[in-house]
Image (cartoon, rainbow, N blue to C red; front, side):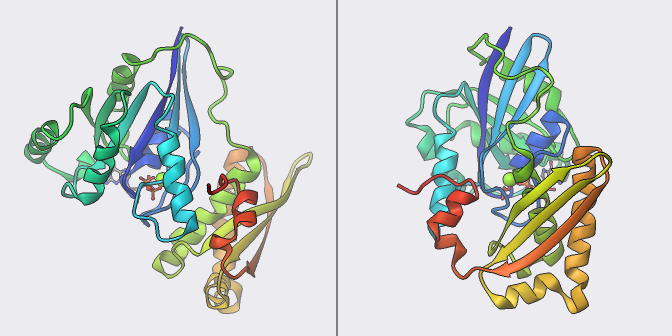
Length: 294
Ligand SMILES: Nc1nc2c(ncn2[C@@H]2O[C@H](COP(=O)(O)OP(=O)(O)OP(=O)(O)O)[C@@H](O)[C@H]2O)c(=O)[nH]1
Ligand SMILES: [Mg+2]
């Protein structure tokens, strides 16, 4: 038996959550093309008869602008301690930038092996990929370099084989049929938040959060109640939409995902409310599962 913990670290929007979902073959972490989608560390458990790897998806590391931003960065850095390996995920279709350099600098103080994962190779030519590998090789003593496409499930098996070399434990941490540590309330809230992000696009980027106030699994139906919280009335207007059309669409799309999650019919009720400055309010952040800002 071989096991261990592996963190997925990188700039926002590089595909960390897409990679986690691809590895566990399920939708655990929400994804969108808006940078800063993930707000919590999310564990995805990869199981084989003699192997268990706990992959930790983290919020993209960025320059923090508010308390939530600082908490997100800290969550990511905490996930680089007491682990067997770090997957440093980069988007191979964009140039190496100050953001990557900033993260690489922090790796210098760790003795955890760092595996460079060049993602989104479906977007570039083989020649460009070779250039990228050469460019990165000189920047940091990476333990390994693996190109993948998380979106197209390309080279993921190879990545897992590479990760296996660095596992140091021999304990099964979770039951072999478990794929996450997340609770259903959190997963429901996230699925609703994903639809808000995707459907309202850039209009409502990070000013929204979702909270499942109640859910109940009945005989042939799951009843779900979720609050969508924004910090301004103008955003509430966007989320509700003309005659409630946007809220209805968010509800329809989220309900389908929640039905897949429970494998049952779902009754979903959404309620949008304004809480000014929720991002700065620690009690609310704690309620939402973010750790305390120290
Ligand atoms: N073409 C292509 N797109 C990808 C790939 N992996 C992820 N994406 C897209 O990149 C965008 C960002 O993906 P996420 O998985 O949400 O990125 P993330 O790194 O988790 O982002 P944050 O949570 O904001 O830090 C989404 O639109 C994905 O569909 C890939 O291999 N190829
Ligand atoms: Mg993410």
